[in-house]
Length: 242
Figure 1 (cartoon, helix red, strand yellow):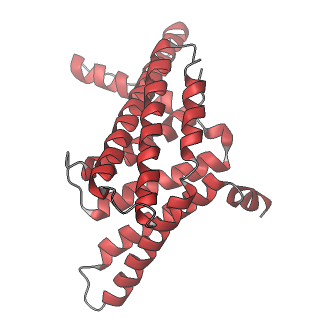
Figure 2 (spheres, rainbow, N blue to C red; figure 1 turned 135 degrees about the horizontal axis):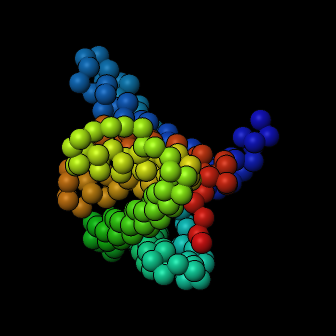
């Protein structure tokens, strides 16, 4: 109970719970819409999803400051590739949150002359860029871990555990084995990769790059939210900058 209280006392923790609720409603609504007699339930889920989405906007108002701080920290990363990916990703997050704040100002009626659709597209575009750069960081980290696992295997002369004649199949099995071991030994990297892959579905759909049905968006958002909950609840699962 104490752990739950500490989690919900954090702004990020409350936002993750609301986000999980929002995308659960979206997923359930998609699953129930084709069924007869579920119109009232679908309407309630739609209203709840909209209310939760509106509530989450309040929690995101201070995210610009956090993104600026993250940018300042990433500038000092020792690895050049990580420094470049993280700094650019955080800069895009700053712009995204600025757009988000402008949309919030428009939604509460403080400025009616704001072009809502234009700012929404800008927010989605910079969110997409941020996720692409974050995924590039994940892939780079995975390649480093695979290289390390390969060196350790070579030093110990550990057998790969398969025997195939085809060289392409042999290479693929070796690659998948190294990938599995690298992610298994580094849960924060696995969690961050899964989260970013699931998150990128939404901007892909919003920008029209690839259309997904609401069920896929809802499932991706739910998985990403659960990963985010784990990261907030267990700080040791957060991928560190080095």
